[in-house]
Image (cartoon, rainbow, N blue to C red; front, side, top):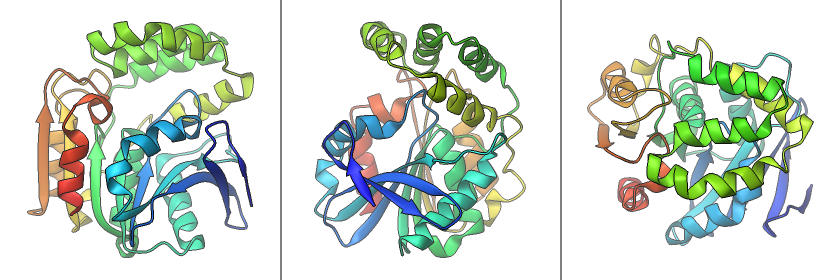
Length: 269
C-alpha cells in the first residue's frame, strides 16, 4: 500500500507478513541502489526530497530505494536483527543483485547483509561505519536526553557529534527548529534504535564479505573515531576493498564532502 508523506514523494510500505517497513523509490535505471541510513532522531523519509535531489545524477542508471527501519519495533532490537529484517524486505520486494550504500548504523547493517546474504549484494559502500563498537558514551548521552524528553539537547548533541564545527554552527537553528517537532513516540523509537549499537561486533564475520566495497571515513569522526573505517578494511582483508579517508568533514562526511557522490557514482559504475 502507499500514501503521501510530507515530502510529496510517494511513501510505500513493504509487508513481509511479520512486519512492515516504509520506503521511497525514485529513479528509473535497471540497476538497484539501496540506501540504508544511519541513526536519526526522526525518520530519514521526512527528508526524502532532499535525498532524491542529491541522487539526481544516479536516476538514469539506478532505481533507488531509501528505507526506514521496520515500523513495529520490538523493545530490544539488534543491528543483526535489523539486517535480517532488511534481507526479508529485499526478498519480499523481489530485489536481488543490489548495490547497497549504508551510512553509520546503516553501514553496520550493510556489513551484516553482505556477509550473511551475499546473494542479495553486488557492491557495498560504507559511510562512517564501524565493525566493532567499544565506546558507547556518546550514545548513552543521546539516550539519556531522549529518556528525559529533551529533544532540543538531543538534536544539538547529535549535530555537534555528527557534523564538523563549521557545519554544526550553520545548522544549529535548523536543528533547534526540528527538535520542536519531535514526538514522544519518536523519542521512544530513537532509544530502541540507539541502544542497538551497544556491543555491536562484526569482526568475526566481515572477512566473509567478498564483494567489491568502498569504505568512506573521516579522520575527525567524533562518533566512532578516526580508526573505525580503516579497521573495517583491515578486518575484511579483501583485495576488492577501496578505502577513502577525508579530513575535516566529521562523521557525516557522506553528506558534507563535496566530491563524495562523484566518488560513489564512479565506484558503482
